[in-house]
Length: 383
Image 1 (cartoon, helix red, strand yellow):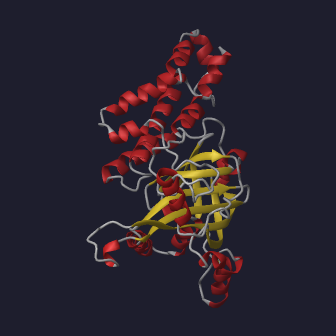
Image 2: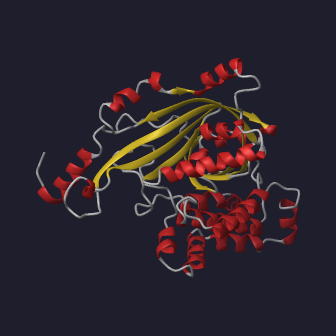
Image 3: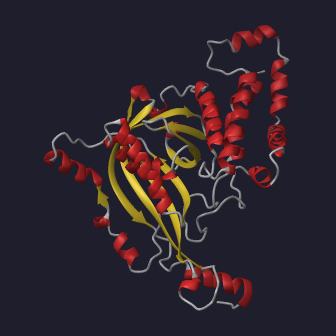
């Protein structure tokens, strides 16, 4: 029936929304108090992933079946398959954009497996080499089914606009930023590219005491804004300052977001963007005094202006214009690759194309939130 076909065509969106539902127990590197963002969940990971993460691996298939049955996928598919054979051939031929029931179910299961691994490895940060290889296989298989819903020029569609949160990356999470893509585009040889990869790995190692919060791309018709939120313990070890032999620290943190902005132009027949890096800013810092300085637009890094200066004064230099390709797009999932084929999987949080407003973050090292927590849980003073 027509209703069955419509239901099948909508299954990827339904399953993606179920998998991307906020989990209050998911990994959280960002204070929910100090982060005033569009989605208030600590991280957007599958609701059912917690059972897989904390349970045995044998739970995995059981969970997949549970999610499928909850969406009544099997019922829709079985009803569709029971239709007369000539109807199926007429409306779901190999030349049609409408996927078959079997192909749709396989696509859904593939998305489930990808998102389970993404959540259980904290967006790929703790993925083993074997897990990354398996993810590459699954993502490549999903890419091979691409644009079956009509998104043949994904970077020119209205559907790609909105707020996208990074769910998985095969490389360092900060390389989702156009700033680091531009840095890679400066490299002219394979040896230089390998050196840049090593530099990025060492950059992350040097910041090992920091925790990465939300990583977002906010896409409009001609602009990309990357938001990379970070937390660092501000008083890590009491034993360094007191005679007490205690290895812990104080719950004061330094928070902030590195915000990179760039112009984007569809290229490669609408399957990729040409990125022209513009500015880098630090927003939402909770460091007193420094906050007022960082909020001044004059202290932002004008990388485009710097590049233009180098073009005029350094022979052979040109402003980098990296290419960022979209290899898969549906209503809630986007897969992109940089010029080296490194993969980034994003989940769509909303259609909002406005950057996050960080003015509500208090510049107090998190002290006010700590005092509120002590009062709410112990002292019970009415304020």
